[in-house]
Image (cartoon, rainbow, N blue to C red; front, side, top):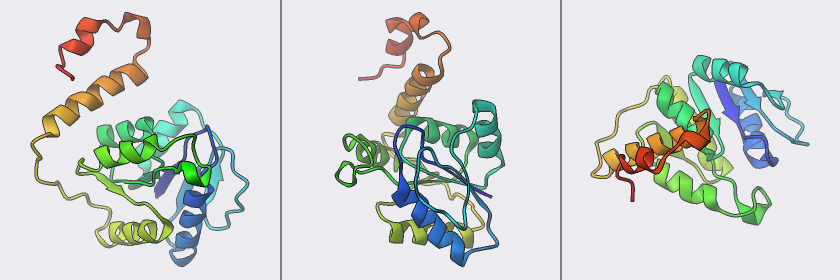
Length: 180
């Protein structure tokens, strides 16, 4: 199964419709999408507008491939579970977000071995085809010089996003990771 997530803040019809057109040609591969607020009429992708954290985690764990917007929660879950991840960042000029921070996030996260970044529907289709052809296997990339620093950044973001009592996060906690 492919699990897609677009977050819950704004519609991301470009990604959902791209998945739907790909799914039409690949009927044997089930896709479930957490679709958020969308008006898109999808015929080949099963959708759920929102789901609880436990259900989201369960779907994430069962999926062979994750497709999503460049949200940090999606990126962190995929990294923790070692899932292959296709990111399509939202674009402000298409009205998909208020600014283009997701493009910057996707560019930085593209250094992770499990992440493929796509910018349009055609490259989404190619990336999905490649994932299927490789049986959803992620080939480890060669370690880059910044890999350790990127890992520290991801750990700090994870702590911030999922730390139960953010008031307890101290400057000492973050500074021990030596983040600049």
